[in-house]
Image 1: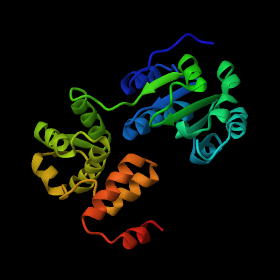
Image 2: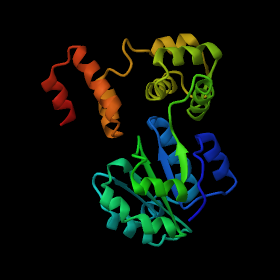
Image 3: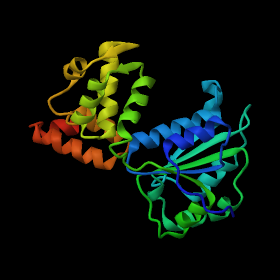
Length: 257
């Protein structure tokens, strides 16, 4: 088994992928769902490249820890890629995979399939479980813990650039202040900005104020978005805000049905 790897951040992951250093096993774990999404997107691009959508569909599988078994994961990992050199298998909410099922994956950690990249993601895992202890030795661990105040502005600037936004300093700081540093809220606000100002336009603090709602994260849309991402913490917070705003519970249930 490989020697222990230290956890790396998103920036280091992208650097490694850019030079062709693609591992067969990744664990993308941490509280920040946007960082996990970014890491998974970077790995997906490195594995699948510019494959056509029809080919990509054959070479990419996503399952969830609370809905799958080890046998299914092993079958997916053992499937050969179609008209490609590699395929991608993603297991989301890996912490929900039962301990017995997880232990059945231990032999795979010793000898992963060379043509498959297996990515295990989740908000948190129990480091005391034998399987996750073994993962620390066998896989590249991508740490998606909350960013500190020093790293947040650079992350906002990078995400804004990906959306075609050119934030000035005042706009960037106002976004961070209004969101309280919540990356999920920041993502949604920047997406609204992109729709509001259009591509490749300089964004000012006035633009940020124009798109800000009275209570970010408190709409039914925010609740549905969090549920689709299986983000329990944000889902509960959004639900509380929706109900506090006076939305009838039965009406909320109707939106979700």
